[in-house]
Figure 1 (cartoon, helix red, strand yellow):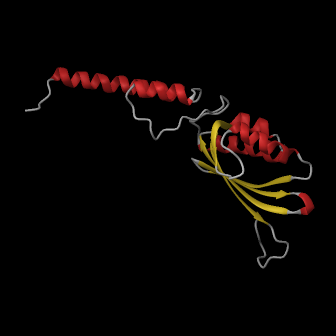
Figure 2: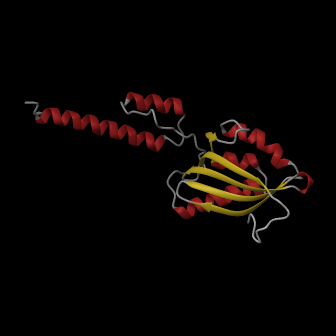
Figure 3: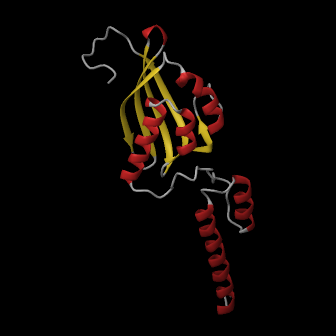
Length: 188
């Protein structure tokens, strides 16, 4: 009872192969697809996408890179963003248009970040000195000494979640730097 014929098994296998081929094609296409169109195609293929985010990454990024290539890309992002203070170029080259922003003062998305951060980074009184760029397979942390008005200094940790060389999510932690500390090696 309930035993499948070879014809039924082949039909189920064919359906699985078609779904697998559609998913494979989508994964190849995912870097350039918009979430809405990709979502529709995936739903038609019968694949559950409720917990999947399709990142709209720049064409200059790649999801499949070695650790050393991701390190090179994140070093370039850090240099362009913090040292050259070219927010627009850094974000257009490495940040997904629909990236998630956890800083409560900045909305989600690449364009919103560029709009808010460009004046901050464009100011001559604001300085950003990269202390280190720490890259793992999914997260990059950039440790920065930020200077501002009235000679104020801030210890900054920017944490980015990445898909290869594409930045898809951001968190930050800022700490005012005290001039008099007990530690002989504070902050950096």
